[in-house]
Image 1 (cartoon, rainbow, N blue to C red):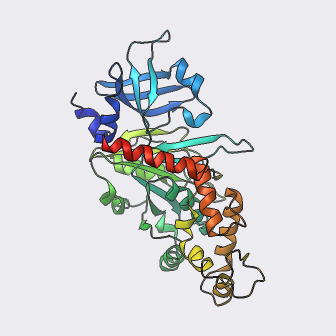
Image 2 (image 1 turned 180 degrees about the horizontal axis):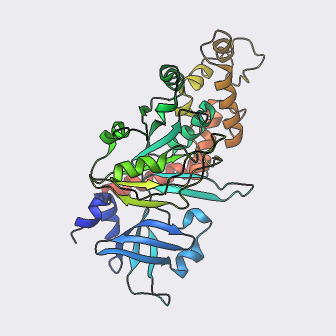
Image 3 (image 1 turned 180 degrees about the vertical axis):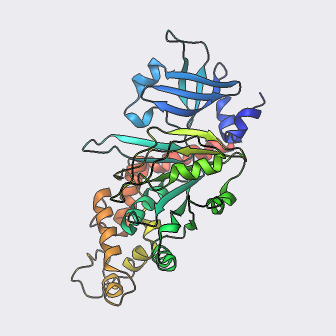
Length: 358
């Protein structure tokens, strides 16, 4: 089957190939989610859909349900409610996830199958390097490519200072500057938009995500509100949705986040220089407190690493359960979380290797 419409929505050969395993079903992409009701895009257009009883029964938690951006296999024979039925979620190539807000330990999928993840932070009172480190930790773990988008540059009195501060924590991510107040204030984003690519905007409430998306869409498709007098954002986006951009590519808009609790994260990428220094300590189990020959503590004392950045690293380590682990223990813990054990990892790699030989 030729998927002309779905290729505009980001369909790649990988998902097309996986879909052939389900000959009786039809390929679609989730474009909106409203609790247990979804909108999906298939080759013929948009449909309302719900999940099958089997999919719901086998779901362990919320992460096992479809999310915006997912590629799914549907039955277009309507159920009793008149909706199509989602029977299968295809393997995600990338996923931005977090623990649900509050005390719940539920995992929440923010967006799936993203190519570029725009982390939006405004250049006013929302500017917060520690929050940015948190977003980058999750973003690098998502398998998407993070790009830092600094919005509301018209409200910044010293842009060069802010850019130098960002450079110290950006972990190699691209940084672009935008202003929603200017007609062409979004043009720095355009080079990242390509036909078939999927981008997502994440960030706190009121940082200008909806304004930027409206600019990219060429029309007002998302509600926007002025920032409050206390400089805190207002929620304007109330649910996630996937939109087809007029010049190619698709964009996922997400509600603003008051908090971002970590379910998993890539500290090695976000804090690469800290982990490199830690590996140079005299003792492999150095706690970076009182031990002699601590390369990391020396770097803090000489100003190579700021104490605030190191404390941020420690805080995220603790949140992820990595606190107190040396480099070898850390690697073993990551393997355990992914595979259960090193033996299971080897079995999985062997299975994949044999599968490719067929």
